[in-house]
Length: 501
Image 1 (cartoon, helix red, strand yellow):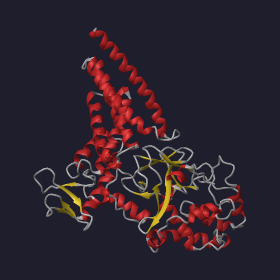
Image 2: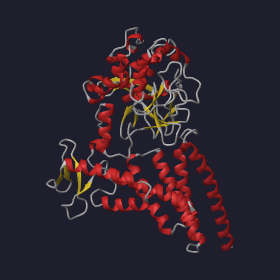
Image 3: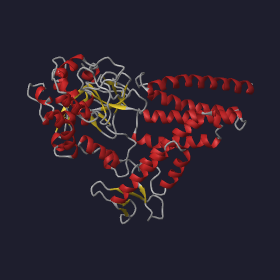
Image 4: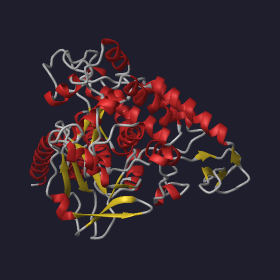
């Protein structure tokens, strides 16, 4: 059974209204970094298109040799024995098993995993609690996703006789509405979890974490460790009675991108302050440069009420929605093909800067890619990186931080990592210039003192991350680097004092 920390009951209060459905407010004042929830998932599932072992969650093409329905890798001897036994009791024919195995990469296995929770007495309370989660069922009815789930989940389960033999927690037979509800619950409520392999992702469903409402300017942060336990903590000071929000999307996406994800996947429209502002709080993360305006400040933004793209200075200057959509899709494709190639990325940045604001979310994506490649170049001293390489990375980090300070105020892992990258690069450049006698020891000391301030701030934010996460491990490395930096500063101070004396 999924374990829940006591913090949630002490610090959170569940409420409900017509706009948000069920949501959570702070029961008491909360300090920045304070933990509200530690929780294990009800169920862990692959993304659609992946087939993962139900024991270790590694990608696999094989099935359990006993039940023959759930995926199991060759390294694992078995999965949950109660689930296995219940599926064996179905006594499906080889032909029926083959039908379900052929659909294993679709929604069949997630639907089965959820239905099995209702088959056992020990997990039935979890199934009943899961059934109360938001589904937006009526909004989904008849949509493309509804039809896909009918064809790829319910139809094969019904054709093989599985739905006739399984029962819901209430004892009623499984029908299409129940299957659609369960898959809708997954779509609306799951969190992304790191998979065992590098860069892979899975989905986790959590009892309490699913209750938090969404805002693109959240007051909560979430982190999921290697044991798939979620930690929810305040990213700023929160007053008793405030609604508690997490962000269901990336804060580094533009308004239209975020709203599209929320509408198609979660079935609601966000009305937060950022979504209501065409300039996205002055960051212009979705703005185009107006070619019709001779002066600076001519940016074309999407008007929320009309959906039209108009210049802020001259409303007669517009862009057609079809042009915007096509241009962004082409840009995304070009960015994808340029990944890892610093020359193509820089050329693409110059090209796109003629059309997009420097803070446009695709420009930020490009800058993140550039920073990543520059990090690799600087870490490989065989490249003998020049001063310009260091300065370029510093400039990119500074530009990213200017946006993050607006869209991710308070504690933010994105901001912490960008700040660390900036501090680290700035310190390395200062040491390089000092070693090449282009900087005095006093100038080096000044740079390292500034670096220490940034490193402390980055570390302060990352120390709230669970230890068993990449960010948690990074904070441990940063702590060691900070101590080394402080030793260097002390040596320089002593050296400068000796020269003065």
